[in-house]
Picture 1 (cartoon, one colour):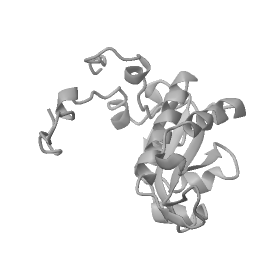
Picture 2 (cartoon, one colour):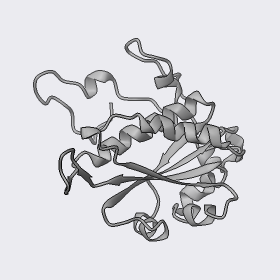
Picture 3 (cartoon, helix red, strand yellow):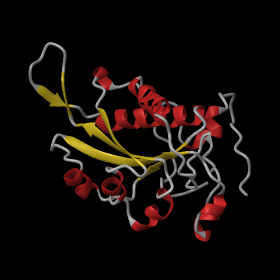
Length: 203
């Protein structure tokens, strides 16, 4: 087991207690709880209040599940099969600014979608669920399967569900089923000028 997470500074416990497990029970998530995740994402900050995030979801055992589940790579399918809900997060690349009738590029679309993902993840923890963002899936196929228009970027997939004991996972994944640690604050914060180590290095 890894060492317990300890913050260097005084922060709310939700930030260290939330993590991204792979072991899920597959138990159904009711509408009220599921939509509370999207409600939390709704209030995320975004440039010019553009709110570029879009979520497409599929519940386990629903008619839409096989198509969304089939987007995941084989390694992620091994554990995500037990999630209750799979979500694909998109971001709109353009935005119509107030007072304008024409869309303009929104350079912060991915950043803003990431803020919405974080809000969703923290709400999931608050509701007694877990959420795990998945980078390993076929984005080009997702665009076709989910009928995503050209003006949107496919960002990540997200598995949501009730956490299960790690014993439900294949043995190699059981060994990774712990909260990960983080770099110290001084590794990514500098005053006045760039003063960071190479991003490939790990302290």
